[in-house]
Image: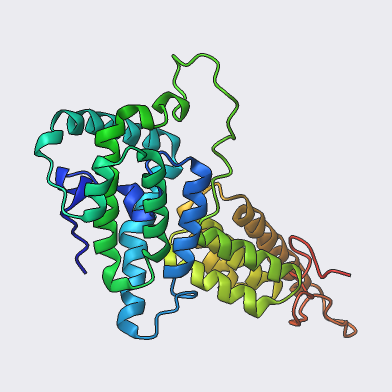
Amino acid sequence: MSFKINRGLFQYDLIDHHAVLGIPVNADFHQIRKRYLQVARRLHPDSCTATTLEEKQRASQLLSKIVNPAYEQFSKERNRAEYLVILREMSKRLAQEASTVELKSKLSQELAQTSNLEHLYQKSIQQLAAKQYENLEQVLDIIGLMSEVNLVYLMRQGASSLPSPTSVARTSNNLKESPQPAPTPQPMSVVEQYYRRAQAFMENNNFAQARIELQDALKLEPNNSSCHSLMGVLYLKQNQVTMAKVHINKALQLNPQEPMALKAKKFIDQAAQKTQKTSTKPTGASQPNQGTNTSGGSGLFGGLFGGKKK
């Protein structure tokens, strides 16, 4: 699917990530994160309200091709700071070329003339964002219109309307800055939400639902070492050692230092050694097997990373 937009800031070979997410150009990171989660829920296959396969595919493509990259641009301080520098330079250019800028929409023309720029701008972005992803066929048109609104705002308000890049990216030349949250842990992505839900289901021994959550997470990010690691532990808790090894080995292949996978691998190796020693003992009176119960949460691997809640 093509997501080409030739309007607003896009016509200057600049991807307008603010327009993609439906946020004003002076939005802080709290606003950015909140809006991203709203859009992601609307477009994700598990929560999308689309009724046809074509609509679901389009929603998924919009999420992966433009929405996720926009959020990634903002979620890393360095990238966001660099992007703000580009917008500042663009605002200066637009101010110089104001007489030659062509505005196609009535809304943009009104914004170019209003005496109450800030109020009308914020109101316009809010109204456009409210319907931005309702009709998937109109998404690109609304993004284009929103980008044109951003263009006018930058042209009139200029660089003074944007957050200072130095307040976002910490460099060695920075003096004291106002306290800001540490960049980690990063805002929860859709995959992280699946991961957390899977953890919660596992704590309640709802292994079937936990597996569904992790499978959905791995569909989005097949090379997520944390999800493979947790999936391995999930299989261990159900005494499905073969499947557990598959995911644990995959997790360590992706990240040799993955803590949970390392712990699980050590647990498997120790259990295998015990089993081997037991099998070499002289045959005698039949003894009950204490570690092969395959019921959920019990048996040989049931105690790994926490057992069943009392």
